[in-house]
Amino acid sequence: MGEGEFAMDLRRRVHEARQALDQARSEGDFYAVDVRTGELDSLLRSAMENGVDVSTAQTAAADQRGER
Image (cartoon, rainbow, N blue to C red; front, top):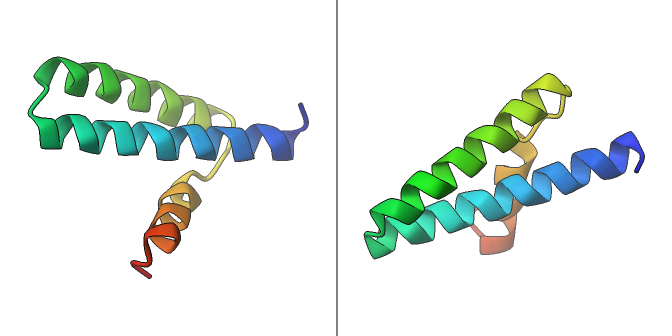
């Protein structure tokens, strides 16, 4: 997997993890919140260590929802 593919996959996974965390919070599922927070932390750490800007994952998600 090339660097571009790695970055795109990581951004996609961060976006999905953020969605899952939001859903767990809205459902009041404290265990899932803990699990999803750990997953997101791990993905964000990986992004930082590999120089991948994941802020675009949030921007892309906002675009999809029509928030921008």
